[in-house]
Length: 403
Image (cartoon, rainbow, N blue to C red; front, side, top):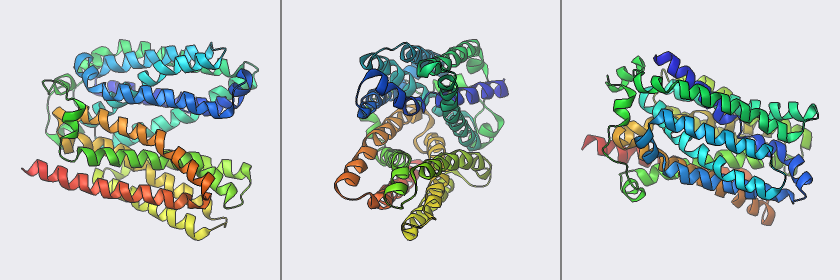
């Protein structure tokens, strides 16, 4: 039962990644077809992000009411419907309309599924599952490219992904008994001393916590800022890394695009390797290791100046990012208690989406009105705040557990 359920969860994580890179890949075709400015992609992105934040904050209530299996199935179905809507859209406002269920479907399943894995499986599975997300995010543009190369247009690319999501919804519906009856994995039971079923543990708390109640928990604000800074750093690197290589380092646009893709390769490959490293290192040490590798990437970016070594700084930053997010998620039940962890998960992930949405545009303003050469120092600032907040989280959560 456990291994079959774990296979379904792995499949779900690939599905989570499939649509995430579609908008950026399809937008060069979409904005010309609909006759809108290229910058309008930000509007769709903001609508999706807003929906994701709202549903993340509601994930605790939904999971306690329905259970992780039903939340996952419903959210994937909602995402499939939104993707079908995208594929049949004939104007920009229709894309904006379908972006609402897209965002609402993404947030609750992300928080609920990550919480389930953190609660019931060892840290290595969290790293490998997020590696599977990277696999899905990499496959999505290839499916879109296949449709466009075959002369079927970007619409059909979205439709193919929607069919895959619909098929996964059927799999999830048939697997609902697994979520109810699957036993906690042996590595999780050994680590946490639990012998109950996932369903029992999921209902451990009597009622969901409000946002105000979560914010009053020791170390909750620090944990939120840690997630905010991590996702801001990752997304800023993703969005502006290529521009930095072109405008500051003098690398050609074609080569910079290839080097920027290595950042994602570093994240995906790093998470595969992190799964093995977690067998020897705990979550806190893995997070610190990742932060140290990011710092090394910063030094390479700065010391290389306009030299050819700069792209390797981006690769190292990707490798450093790899273990941080999965290990932050996996450590949440231990730091805040299993009965409160689902509520904390939702707030943390909402904070992460705010960082993703807010901080890359802020650097865009800095690059426009100051200099793009400040890119590494902007990343260093986010890293410094992340390290500070994470260490405060570790100390404060540790004191709470010992009292």
